[in-house]
Image (cartoon, rainbow, N blue to C red; front, top):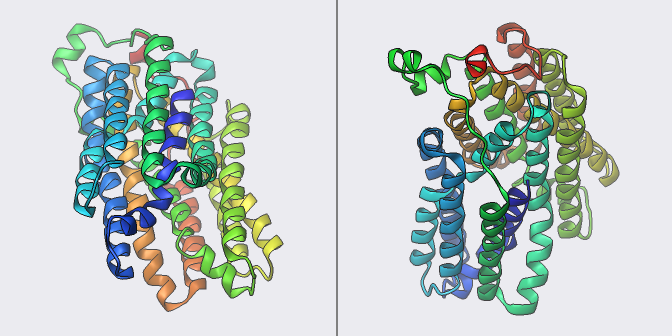
Length: 392
């Protein structure tokens, strides 16, 4: 949890200010700044989405801690190197390399599930997810202060120091538990493949849930400031930051609270209800007459999104043997990152037609997701124990 919080906070110390850094590197045209920034921000999650299942599968074989250490070491080096670039293409090249070695967030979820007693897997996953939400909520605020004190270049060195702290505490304090393995005869006759992981009960359905929720969640970033400006608000930047903070903190609350209340309850019912609540909230946000109504809708929406993600990841952990959780969480991360990558592009196109079209589309996607879950997902307790193979 600490490694996730420090790492995710460190990442957002500098990334929100990347357009300013690109301009410092000598790019003067606003359009060119936007292109360099967009490509640099998008290339890392795109590469990570492709490689996360492969890194997860390797982690299942050689240990998850080693793979997370590898990722954090690379972040220390790469973030430090970004402080010394002199051209935008160098920054882009470092972001490409960063995408190759990134993806420790999903491994931290798998490590939390491995470390927790079976009856506390949901709480462990929710705590790591909460830290991954709170880190980006606080990171930009700290980043703005640090950049104002030491400058943008030196802010990258501070970010590298954040990752170094996460690396040291993980190496020194985390002890990796032994991962239960299937009997030798079973491993020889039925080796684990991506296809076999996808065949676990509800796994593909849960991938769809995670993709859909991330798609809707990330669609609001490009349009909320414009939506707030259309309301006639004077200080758009401050109000937008406030709404985004409400979204982050309410989602963290959704992660935390849901984990304590989901044991023995139907995962299908929890996910479908939360999706419908989120649909109602995002629709209300689209027709909100004022800022306070928008903030209230954002609070409900964030809570529902956090609850859905915790139930989805916990249910997925319950249908996977511990020996393949790295692979499984890698596939779930790929679904999440595809949603993250596709959402801003599609919402931007919709916003070009009408800002409210984004909110309407999000509400429709969530309603379809809720109805599909009701019809397709097999009935499973939200905090179900891992299958019998884990006991073996």
